[in-house]
Structure formats: C-alpha cells, structure tokens
Length: 335
Image 1 (cartoon, rainbow, N blue to C red):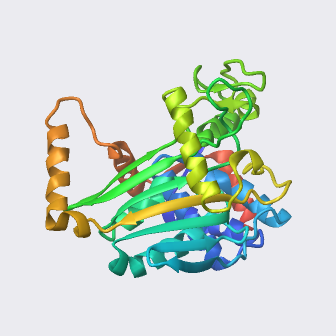
Image 2: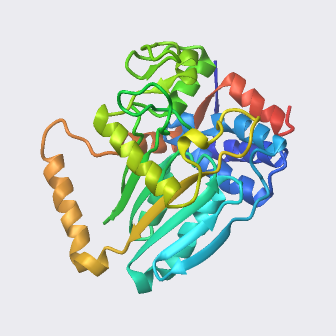
C-alpha cells in the first residue's frame, strides 16, 4: 500500500522528524528539501526513505544534526569546507554559495568538503549551480560498496559523478550516475520492501552473484563498465578523500546504522564560468549538440525522465510506501 502526499506536506513531515531527532531547524529544512526533491523525481533511494536512518544517527551522535559547517577560502579559486561531522547538505550548500561569491575573479572554483555524510542525489547540487548560469561537476565517495576489479573486498564506494550545465529557456542539463551498476539506495529500498533485485547488480558476501537484496547489502556492488568503472571509482576516491582529507570508503562507517563513529566521507565540486572560455557562444553550442541528438529517432537526453517525474509529482503528489509514511508521522510527533 502507498500513501500519496504533496511535496509541501512531505517536506513538513521530514523536517519535523529530523528536528525531533536533535537536528537544528535550519539544518533539518536544508536536508528535508533535498530528500523531498529526490522523491519528486522518482529517486526514492535518496529520498525520505533516508530520514529514519538520519534521525537515528542524529540521536546516537553518529551525525551532528546541529553542526555549523566551517568554510574557508584557501586560494583565489579554492573553497574548503569542514562539515564537522554534520549532514552533508548544509556543508555543500555553504561551500557552493561561497564559491559562487568568488567565481567572478577566478573563473573556475573548486570546493572540497571533508568530515561529511551522505549527500543524496548528486545531481541536486550541481543543478542549483547550473541554475545560476555555471557549469558544475560533482563527486562524492561513500562507505565501501565495491571491490577493485578482480577483488572481493569492498574498497570503493558507489562514488557517483554528476554534471550540470545551463540551457537557454530550458531547465539545466543534468547528468548524474553512480559508478556501480545501480545506486545502493535502490537495493536498500528493495530490501525494505522485501523485493528481489535483478541478477548482475551485486554480489553476496562470498563474492557470488545474488538476487537477494539483503545479501547484496551485506556484499558488494558491481561497477559499470567492469574494470573501467572500478578505475573511475578509484579516481573519485582520490578527489573526495585523498584531496579533502576525508575517509576513504573502506574507512567510513555505514550510512544505514546508528552505531559506530561518523562516516567522515568527502565531496568535491568544480564550478566553471563558461563565459571565460566560450563567451556568449556557449549556450548556442550546447543547443546545437542537443538538437543533433534530438534529431535521431529513439534518443533522449539524460534527465528527461527525471524532469517528467518532477512535473508529475508536482501535479499529483508523491507516493510513499505506507509503512514509511507512518514512520515519518510517528517520528514527527503526528498521529
């Protein structure tokens, strides 16, 4: 059974559940907005299904719901953010906001975030930058979920990569992909629902292919592109952990349990002002490429389905599993 609610109602529920779990109202609002946005786009693995985990971790102290990120400009085009074991969303917002304040002089700004937490759908962050007229790349690592190619022990996270660029008279083009064949959140949702997963998504703890979502959660994910995907995951580990001083995936504690120390993973963003390279031609060049793609029958742009789902959710609301809805109501102090 499902319960359909408006985005505003879901936002209030998610925020209420987090505030009740020792999270500041300011942080709770930032986190809830990002999670509800994910649900509105059909990305339920990064949506309010995370609230029970977040809330339990805020109560146990694994994440500091009241943390205020520390933001420093360390060079003309460099911003460094210490999330201070708090939620990732406020730290990312603070870092990107500061980067957008200084990009005029630098043209390109990088943002490194350390001592962070789960950052949800990576496309959410880069889209906000693209809405301001800039190109953005985003990277994050996560607790170990993938083995090196040929190995059997989780060493890399699913380590998504996101890209966004502005478009004239259209929402930004957003590309958001996990370096595992699917985001681990999809397997988490399947486990919550008691559903199986397709063969080829994951291995169990013994390194054997599995369709059991619980066994997959205890095992490792398979990378996209086999060895190439594992190599890209290593690249992301270097950008988000070695470069930021955060934990590598194999050092980070789980996003799904309240026990253990803070995960202290990292994020890294690159923001580019297209005008300093392409002048006013950039927008036209992007549209030229998109038109060439659209001219071929059967093609679609990355994000087309996401935008369609966003509009559908705006008109008809967001459907949640009934048990999850009731969990949020209870946590938020409702009835």
